[in-house]
Length: 121
Image 1 (cartoon, rainbow, N blue to C red):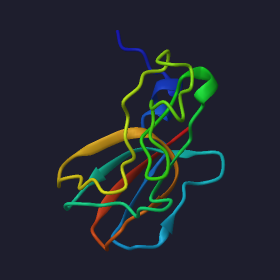
Image 2: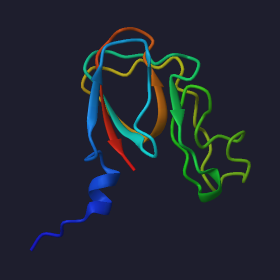
Image 3: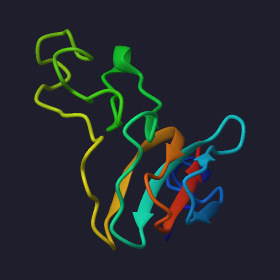
Image 4: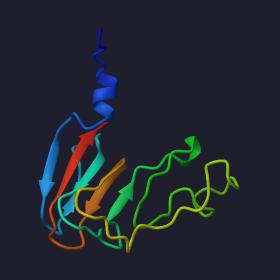
């Protein structure tokens, strides 16, 4: 027997999606976040606020971004309890077909390459 869990569904992008091929600022609906982004072409996000993560550092939840490096010594001063070695994603080219997962409150594409964004809580 399967379990129909709205908690799981809402956390994994079943609250809607959007597609964009623009350099405009993309934001999810109020109270929601982007939980996954699929690259429909090779993609580089804007170096400033291109991926703004919804981090909860106190709980050890950090996500990749273009302004802050998740799980690095600056954002994670607990000396490794939350992990170390993460880098800023401001120059990384994400290849076509790759999906990244996390929690983002704002996305800005560096070029007008198409991406698909999935919305969750």
